[in-house]
Length: 207
Image (cartoon, rainbow, N blue to C red; front, side):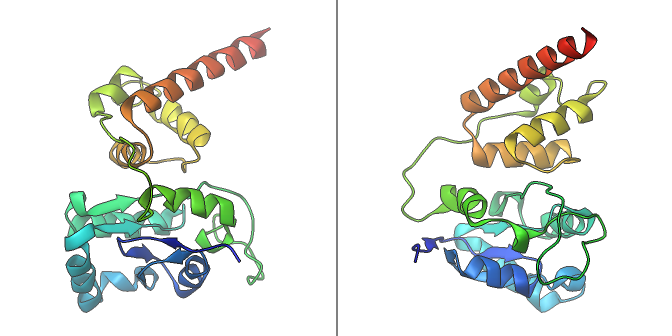
């Protein structure tokens, strides 16, 4: 049996099946929002605020509209420097326990494979070697054509797909995610490589 990853920050997910899924992989405190229940459960929100104080909170929701609403609510209620947002990719499919796909037809947290989930949480492992991350700024996104210019959302979605992030992320959410995952130089190199690849594909389609 593969050893579970020890994570210091508490992890927040949407529902009990997400919690069960992560409990098999993580040695961590895992809490649920009970879906939209967090919107009215003041005591649960107060608990999350208190738990965020020492080490912050890791937020992992499904990559659908509901997940985005829950992230936005938590972001409005808890200081941004205490929230670490990680994202699952948008993968079409249906969880085995369900008789039909979700409304948007995408797999949720419980449907992700072990390797992907372990990769998402690896940077937060208590024994992970330190590696410089962060440093990407809004100015970098603007220079890369990822915000503030025509077709910025389209370019951002294309790069998000290459990085394993969901589409339709706001510039702020995208910036927060890449600063958790990459050092500035690493991100800029990936962005440049993606742009070059997109240009090549575009030229080939013209031919």
